Length: 231
Image: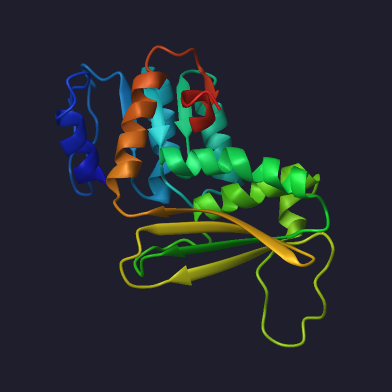
């Protein structure tokens, strides 16, 4: 992702790459010329990176996934001093999907059971994906449920019949799958599915660069791709 971000940014006449950071390289120093930092590094670096951007007044675009409560708290703290945008997925298509799935859940009603199925390459370290969590959160909000109580990662064995308030979450890992996400609405005698398939990682880099352009000049605060895309 870092390599594609740099390559696509260098090809964009509206952008200038002024500093690149990778594992083992020197950290950001004086930051001369930096307006926005795009961070697709590891989860363990997010809190320090967010704090540094807040201290320097740089916009912060983060695409690291697997966030827990303390990471969101770090983003919220940074957002009091600078513009912060975190997204589990920067694809324009995925963010359109996120905008649609809640509407469909409301329109179809409680007779339809909800399932999220996601597939990624064998090297992905977090499960479920940040995007799958995001889809689950949207579905839970649409039904008025608590995400942590509704989402089910089913164990083996005699688990009993499906509860009324449940969002199933299924994870597939293997090969070189870039990313696939499908939401299933399973009703009596009919089913609806809405999904997205990524075929090239450039879609994530292009979305992050679009977010960085939009974030530049924004007031301090916490933003999302829905703001960038006016969804």
